[in-house]
Length: 131
Image (cartoon, rainbow, N blue to C red):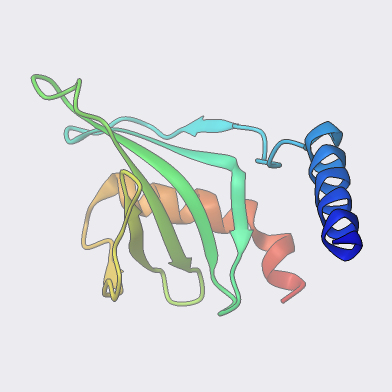
C-alpha cells in the first residue's frame, strides 16, 4: 500500500509539474512574401521565411499562386522542391496535402514557375554553397 501511495504521489507531482511548465510555441519562420511579376496566368509569390535546404541538397519553399480573373479568389499554396542545378521543380504539398512521389518537372515556358525558380535559387545561393 505504501508503494502504491508513493507511486501515486510521484505521478501527481509529475503531472502538476508538467501542467505548470510553460510550453514554448512552435518556431515557424517569419512570413516574407515576395511577389513575382504577374502573367496572363495569374500572380505568384514565394516566402523567403520558408526557404530551406533539404537533405537531398535541394531548396524547398512555400509559394502561393492566384489565377487571373475570373478565378482570382481560388489561390493555392504549394511547397515546392527546386533543383537549382537542373532548373527542375516538383510540388511536394498542395494546400497542405502531401504529394507523395511527385515527379520532377521543367517550367516548360510557364513564366511564373521560371521566375519562381530563378528568384528562389538566387536567394538560396548561400544555403546551396554550404551543402
